[in-house]
Length: 446
Ligand code: SAH
Ligand code: SF4
Ligand code: F3S
Image (cartoon, rainbow, N blue to C red; front, side, top):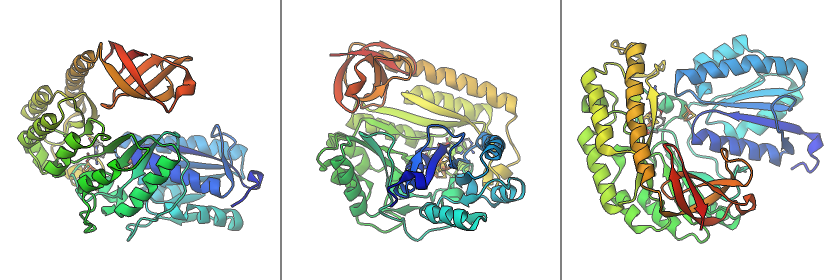
């Protein structure tokens, strides 16, 4: 450890993509700070610039190469600065070949499974002055005990597993994150206890498919068992998790929503499509009916549970009938909200080779219809909150309301804005909902 930060310099991390990447960036920041680096307020002028990339859709790729162009100029002004790129895009040889060939100002490339090596790559880069590359295709264990610099004091992500074994035919993630690998339950519990001691009240367990936690590693604990064990940790008041795959959403897991007080009544359960025919082509391994059955069971166990989802529009071969099935599912499922995506062709995935790609114009028209239907339901669902008193974890100043306004989430993950002193961030409070919009609620402290 270096006590004098001036010995090392400043760092800035730009993070794209999902919560897994956000969590990885916290680890990268933690390692850098242990080595004496200090977080910079802005990218320009910082000594180490890191871009943690996402590859899930094509526009993410394009944005990244755009950023590298901007960084070239920054580096011209500050030639001693070091540029490192990491994350899911780096797991594709096509991408790293382009960077090595055309973006010589990038000093370090490291993969999603080489995060723990970053401090030594950085040291070598500074000492030897050469490019440093480390991209592995697989790991046999998850490195424990890495430091972390959390974004929030009172809530935290906890990674429980890496990778994905599902190979949905549209998705790049199994190729960028490798096979499923779970952390031992003891290590997870120990981390959460440490977080609780540190004042954390809410944790979100992370994995691409948390419902298959432990399966690939042959652990005795499955995901439901893990939730029971976490319930007993003093200090933790709220537990969330994401993402769940419908094919592995077991009855045991569903029951936990009725039994565990700390488990928040919200599940993010990506459906992707309402057409059983397309779900099969996507390799999702459930049908529309099976999905609706799961929702009925969940609502049976916990009537107030909020359900959110992801939907892809324009998967290859999507017909009008397939799309109408999705519209029908949306009406029946009544999601609290949904992330909707235009299908994006990812090189190396099976669906990219399918010949019946849907024309852009049709994709967009369907997308707009779907979003309108989802928003109308979100607005109705939110309106039902008016007049209710909700428990909120105050997160700090609201992005919308400005000074003297805070925001926080209900157990069901609804964003609420209300007048409140920012010094109360991190506290739980009762808030009466006075007004509801499509995407957020407004209320007052009671
Ligand atoms: N593991 C999670 C999802 C991770 S990716 C799960 O299986 O539910 C997040 C979302 O991105 C997916 O749910 C999907 O809706 C979307 N997505 C993934 N690949 C995509 C692609 N090629 N085009 C458009 N959307 C995609
Ligand atoms: Fe991608 Fe499917 Fe794995 Fe989710 S479950 S990360 S959509 S392959
Ligand atoms: Fe993107 Fe990788 Fe997450 S591709 S969505 S950052 S796992």
